[in-house]
Image 1: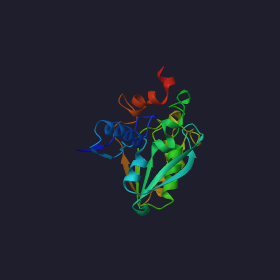
Image 2: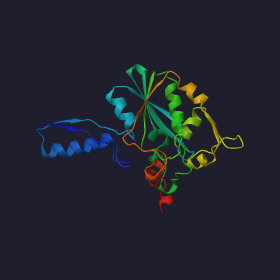
Image 3: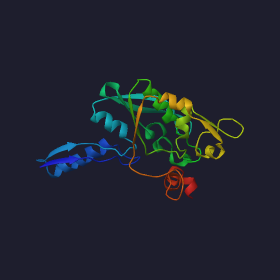
Length: 218
């Protein structure tokens, strides 16, 4: 029998390839005659960059970026098709796993590092950018990404709003021109397994916010 083992990661525990390997080891003990194929998968969250890059036999690149709470973290992006396609995931630059549980704050965490990771990938001049969503520590609506790409998000006094979800309460005007120019000519593909708006009872802030900030859930 030919068995395909295709798991996602176990959040903050095991990467998808580790899960696949563990299942395969157990299966071989029970049925050593079976042919096993390991195909680690991802849903747009953590592990998406690695899974897609390895599946397409691309190259993985590391980049130091600003973590969700402002500390430096080492993140990765992938290049496939000879660099024509870049793969970036929010979980790499702004992931929940980057912040210890006791330090998580949905109101303060920023996606700025993901924007920096995008800039590093765009420096290779791809024509397509695949953006994986999920597994982030943030609920800032991508404001940090826009800020890293050069957009101006301003308060009523004309000053830049603070990074993080709480800063959005001060947003009065914005200039997206620099960010739009950086993405000019780039086909942007979003990889995501849920359909949540930012706000409302089914919004990302209400549904996922408590995961990103245990202190707010208490």
